[in-house]
Length: 168
Image 1: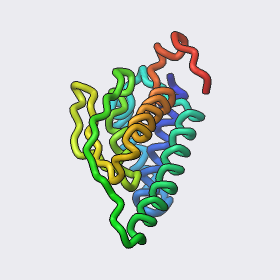
Image 2 (image 1 turned 45 degrees about the vertical axis):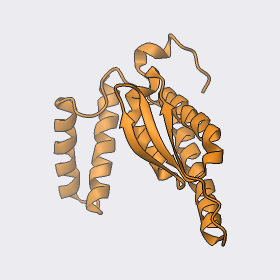
Image 3 (image 1 turned 180 degrees about the horizontal axis):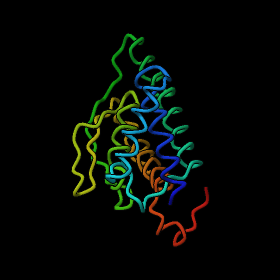
Image 4 (image 1 turned 60 degrees about the vertical axis):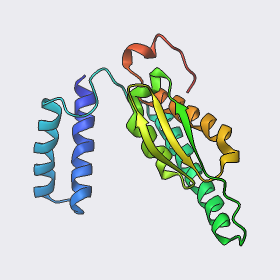
């Protein structure tokens, strides 16, 4: 458990220095105080939640690729003279395992041009999405499920890791 806290403290100090825009003795010291207090008071990731680096990187890659592809789709839509958009609102159900990562999913979806989260019902596991192209409805719903899978793999509770052997 100690290496996890040390890694968290070092990471929080790095983020603190990044937010201040400089690495200095004062920033490192004040960042250390904030990081130690945050860890001691139990803020952040629950102790039974583990971060798996490789699936987290895959999730990041997936979101980055989505961002690039969707930006080109939206740019092409803007540059065409004829309006080919058929907008819609779709309801996407998030499985119970993905509800623990609801905020991460909402942010990942909202980053993608052409989609926007308009409402969530976390207690029911529902995300309502605005789509620029209704004909991509099924593809978008399947993609959200893929995001749920990657988020669940990357941030799975430690108790579930040995129970479910999922390839990474």
